[in-house]
Length: 417
Image (cartoon, rainbow, N blue to C red; front, side, top):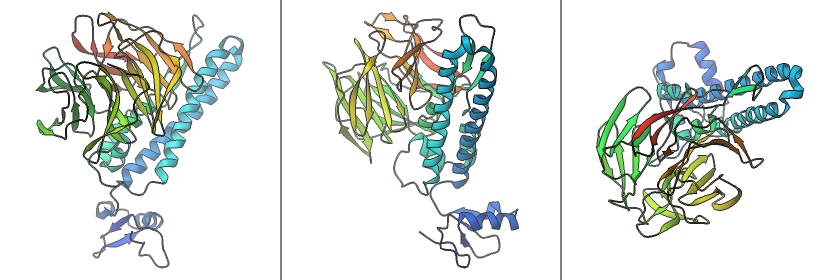
């Protein structure tokens, strides 16, 4: 790694500038001084690292803003709740827990960011690392969806407060450029909340989709080709085959595990599966198996932790951490497949909808907190449905592809209440 070329400076150089002709290397400290003395030279800067430092700083700025605003929200709620303490004590504790978890998430992510100076080259990057490598326009666009939790006092009825939850964990750990689903004609559809594109017809409802870069979707498995693994470019409308998966599978879950795209459980045409594979360095590799077989499970990643919920005739939840799966004591209220999941913090998840016995659909919605192993009931969905595909978040709404009992796929907006 090159050092700063300023006199008597041995710090690592992260930028170079050619505003005065010959290019010279600068550390962060001398870069700030240089920009102060030469305010019009931004366009002459060249990164010496593979990370976009401006994007990283933009992420840090937004995290600190959310942390600061959440602290202010805590101060406000403490002031207002003091007058109503006898009636709002339980709800205050819940809201403060969520806000403190957001602060902890901001601080944890901030501490990670300030220690990252470079990102090694590889085929795919997690959503978080992709933000750090992207240009500042794309990063800024993504950060517009990051927000802090807010609350509102209302006249006490069934509850004292309403809260607009912040899905910060979901936005940090998952791509949020568009949601994807297969329509009634089995076309893969991508929708960014404003416009919709129909891509390719796979005629296979049991495959699964995972966004692995701002423009690329990973398609895996399915009844018509259970070892399938291909990349779809949504701008070039191209298909790139990858190495086949090790196991045949359909009705599986997709997420990120240890920074790699992963497929979890499913059905091989004869049996439910407990196997898990990750796509690491252009090859599929099996990792530790689930504790029980699961067809049509749902999965959500929260940093270094992954949770898998339910499956066909399954009500249990498993946690992946430190390369191992653990079966948790807390369970879903009922056997539930294809339940929708949104992570709010590194310890809380909103669960909604689901499917049972191939004919019963749920309007269930609740929040699970893994720190205290408790369920918090929420307002039910207006209509029953299950959710197979990646969600997309616009401000305070979750938009997903919903399947109802008529097998009609449509976009569906879910409020965080």
